Image 1 (spheres, rainbow, N blue to C red):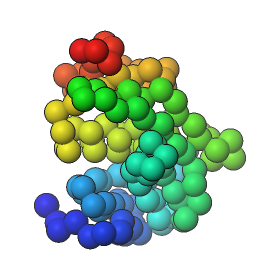
Image 2 (cartoon, rainbow, N blue to C red):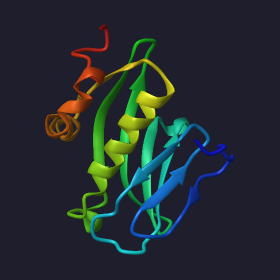
Image 3 (cartoon, one colour):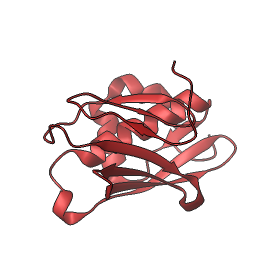
Image 4 (cartoon, rainbow, N blue to C red):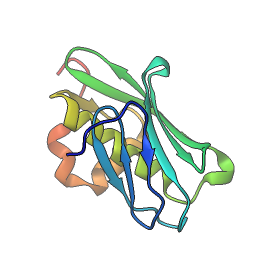
Length: 132
C-alpha cells in the first residue's frame, strides 16, 4: 500500500486511484472519461462524499457506534444522476469501513441495500441492526 498523505490525491485516467489518509481505493469511472473523481470521508459531517472535477456529486450519510456503521441516506445531485456515482461512492465507503475496522454495516438506505444485493461477496459485512 502507498504511504497515506494528508490530502487526497486524484489521478486522472480511465482508472482512478484515490489515496486518503486511511487507505487507497480504485474506482473505474463509467461514463466520464478523464474527469477526476475524488472520494472523501467528511467525518465532521458524518458522510462520505464524491466529487467530480471538484464539484460535489453524491453523498452517503453514516452513523457509527461501537460495533456498527449505519448508512441511512444516499443522495446524488439531480443533474448528476444516472452516471453510477452513488454506486461508486457506496463501493468506496464499504471498502473504507472494511479496511479500517471490524465494524458491521447496517444498510438503512434502500440504495445501499440494493447495492449489497448486487454484491453478495460483501454480505459478511452486513448487520441486521445496530445492536448486532
